Image 1 (cartoon, one colour):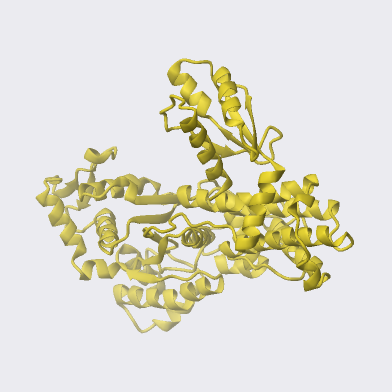
Image 2 (cartoon, rainbow, N blue to C red; image 1 turned 180 degrees about the vertical axis):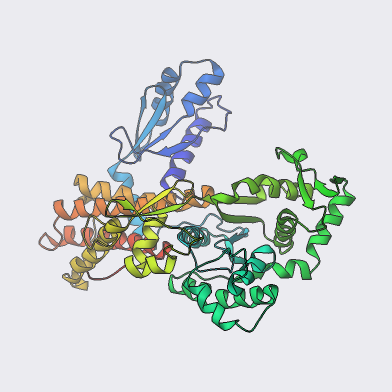
Length: 525
């Protein structure tokens, strides 16, 4: 149970004991983190006061008095009506002892329950060229989200959707053969051209070139940056299995598809879309919408409770139509979650590095990783909300100093290892008394450790990956402050053993946080 959950239970228990007439369930408890007014706060008085027409601060003061009967928390009301909880030294020591005995912080959301099945589809770059920076950003986000959901108890499957059918494959073939319009350019196209100089059919060339790009460029690049998939799903299989036709017939039977101007339209406006969408063009060609709805239905037919797609910003307008199509088939809108990933710019020496995919002059993901390293690339891509544009500071990413946030975190892990190596095992196992840890830097570090399971569980609910690297940085900050204020080696045995245990727990959480991000936790630097 997290500290936040402990406080929620404490509030519920006190409400029940004192038979307070509060039935509203929309209140919540939030971590304040670094606030001088407390460690956690609830908006209960604000919610109830508004509904009952009672001044919120007055109600908060009454509640704080009612909740304050505990040696675990100090409770006070603050304007305009929040109730703040400050963890006591007694509570921290008690919780730290439990964790030390158990050896870990529990992040599982489904203890004793069956695990929901989640599929995450990410990267899914067309096999028409090397992976771009945008592919990398979505790739790292998907990879880390899968790690976090797994450690939270979900059953996770990672999938790459191979777009190996459609116009882009024909365009690839024409580009390789040098036939106008040439859409794809670059050295890799020139190399492919030499392999197909005796071929003339752009469809055949495109199909074979796509296989080469997938197997010789995309898959090796993904392996090098530590991204692995459970399933590689071919778009062609959707057609081979008759899934597209199955969906269209099902929608026609439900009278949700109609004909207009020679085309077949899906009535997506009945399910929240701003307009109806074409499923079959007047030429008889099926649109991407038809294929995507069929593909997503196939995912749910495999037994997934929820599907998470990670798409580039250029696909934003496709979210409502796909969700509407799935609703038309009887699925809930909430069963599909789409995370939009915005563009990446490389900033080098204060200037934006110009890139143009169409001209063939752009930095590939692999080129960036080879220059800055996989750890820095991952951290910088993960450290900002996916829906925000990312300016990648190249000069900062290559620095080997505390200015570089990933170096700063890794150095904290290595420094702890260095300290612990100076103390023999017998000294580490001397009598541990967490009551001795009353320095403000020790208390700050202890409190930060207890945020770890909360961060993991919050990400498992809202998919805001940036919380993890930001948390790891805050933990490293608190450790470095502890290091400045609290000597470990040259203190009396009981205090040394207690501080060693605190360091072991800190090192463990740093290592787990870095592992979830796919970043190395070095023992020395």
